[in-house]
Length: 364
Image (cartoon, rainbow, N blue to C red):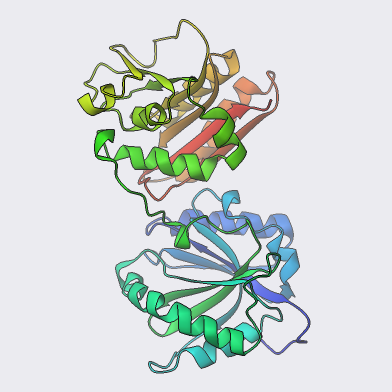
């Protein structure tokens, strides 16, 4: 456990990131880079298949120094990113609240809310039922200890991550810095009319990669979109459902339920060579192809003005995932650097597997 500290000083001892099992190496590299960028001295601990990675600082640091730089959106392969301030081992089976409240007190600050989370592994998910049952009594215990003030919008949120039944990592997040969903895992309903489960990937991308203002402005009914490699139509449906007119480009078949929206025109053509007659708001692309080729295609659409913005998938090689992403970054920058400033956001979504999903747009 960390040494004692003044009660009025909020502290942290490192960073904790949740991810998909099998991507710990990529998250570890990103945490190392983030720590170097913010001047945090320490080391990474990553165990393959654990679905979480920690960066452990050599000494305590002010929580504020980490919190301002700790936005889950800043790492590609992290579903959640949090400053951690305590780890509790050997939790008793009957009274977990007492040691956890004591650990929460060591943070040196109060909290506005409580979130109990687990890594995305079979072992850790066995604690999900416990987390649901434990949230209310634990919140009440924190309240009695004077550590929880639910109506305080500016206080951090307390996150307790249970990798197993006897271990807990205590973390804190500033408002707006943590993932939108517990453990970064969205609970989305599969629309029967969407034609494909890939629609969930687009739904997650819309809420993960776009701001609320961007969603309101760019997904308005009446705007136009193009879906390259659209079949069977899961991505197309997300735009048609919102009232956008979609040109679905694919030599394959589009699901009848997607065409039934009356917002979709199916064009049988090659997504790499087809071009629209007029510029559109959106071009989206989920074609199975080399990531560098997709990145170049999307950058050309945005750079030429054929579309204002794009959401697209990059299918990554099993090895050198980060290298593949960096190559795509460079290709996009080469095409757009002379055009103007742009936003490129890349995230390994919950509904992604060996791929990442990205958003690209020129700044208005």
